[in-house]
Length: 206
Ligand SMILES: Nc1ncnc2c1ncn2[C@@H]1O[C@H](COP(=O)(O)OP(=O)(O)OP(=O)(O)O)[C@@H](O)[C@H]1O
Image 1 (tube, helix red, strand yellow):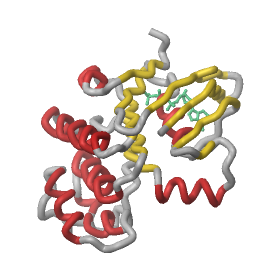
Image 2 (spheres, rainbow, N blue to C red; image 1 turned 180 degrees about the vertical axis):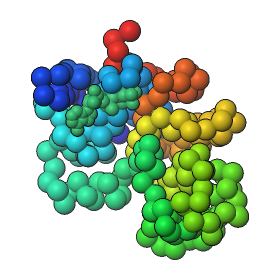
Image 3 (cartoon, protein in one colour; image 1 turned 90 degrees about the horizontal axis):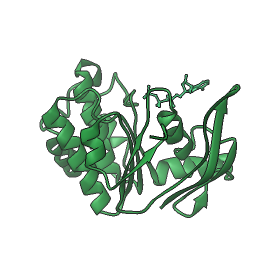
């Protein structure tokens, strides 16, 4: 589903990673690890077509995303990619329900309600996002992914703001999405999260 082939990325004269290659199959969950500043978020941004690589190729769902035009990139983001990033990318002034509705083309109240239940936010659909805690917002972002059902999930420290029970829930949900055929990449500092993955890509060269 995802194949990164000898990708290199620098900011100025600082090389973050060079000749990095890895694959993530459909159904697989891969941890992206390495010290702070080693470029984990940047890898996710490159896989997510939000940042270009300097050299090498990335293929996602059969498309070489390092070469596609803006229109195809937009379609990939809409139809194939799912992001679970640190800013949660939620619409803060809107309700939880509205944030889930924008992820799907058909309005499906039941699947939204089930997704909220799954992340421990059953009955909170009418709450406005800015009133929720950081961890609750993180879980709304996860519920939005559940209703979107993307082929690829890119998660950046998805357990960062959560207690251990909720962290376990997040990993369980991502595992369930993988079982349904999704390729999941998780940037993390957590050994616990890494342990729950099928493979590790280490940017620190340990
Ligand atoms: N757009 C940018 N322009 C310049 N430098 C950048 C840019 N984005 C990231 N960097 C730098 O690249 C390095 C890697 O950042 P990145 O966020 O990918 O690391 P990380 O491994 O995810 O770190 P952390 O574990 O602390 O979240 C950092 O030194 C950061 O300052």
